[in-house]
Length: 348
Image (tube, rainbow, N blue to C red; front, top):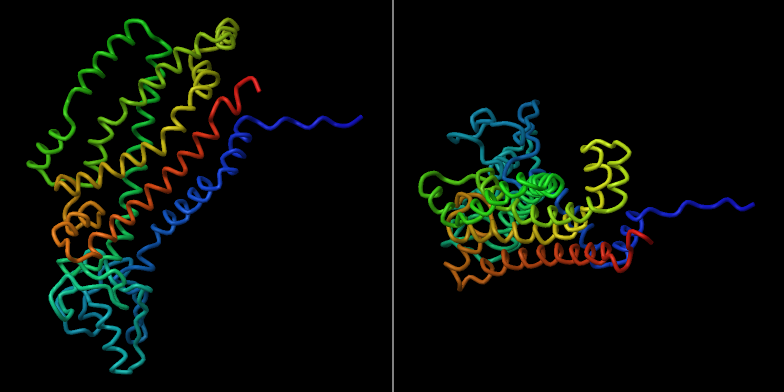
């Protein structure tokens, strides 16, 4: 007698469907690889040396401050490692410097360059420099890490809060639901942009401050979806059966209702990431975001608009923003198709 093979789970079916959506699957791979590599950027794009060998001793500037005098360079403060490399090469005393592949930092002003900034693209500076002589390519790739990290932090934490509160509202209902709903309506009526403007006039916003402010307003949208899902699911027969068998509220929520209520969370998450990337870019462009010296696509767009004739300053951040958002939208499209109930229903 032939052995019966187990039927694949609904998650496996959805994953298989998502992988069949080539645009979404390839976009997910591209974003995962590039975002993972962004944490290794100091080893590839930086003005700090990876290793300095001086008088038989090895130094690792990537992991700490080293003064120029300790490395034989006549300079106050930290060493300029590009100049130090040329100095060691000219002296030919056996000392050497290993620099990253692209030896320029995102906050470094290259004032020693000939001419007046911004400088056009060249073999040394692939996308030129901005009006403060900062390398555009270095700021662009570091800005990618900032934008994606910001969007992921805001989306994940806001969704955790929204799912938690929405789930409790939908499950317990009654007076608790009515009371918290009124609070959400009052909180949601506070203008987000005015709040940012007031706080920006008092203190300089930081990465985590902006993330916290956006989280404080972003969790409400998902609350409504999860609340509705919980109201629908708790009336199902399988939930009533679990309650009649003595299952605790915790088991009913986490074992039965929540897994069947996550479709809007997973479907909307890519588009929430798009919205949060755009929110950071918009705040930086308006001057209410990160400090100007931080590598941010919004501040780069602002610099580009102030120097509209220097095409690379406008094209570079807008092209990076367009490609990134397009990839995330492709992922969202694939997830939406994979979770389409008309393709795989709960009864199939």
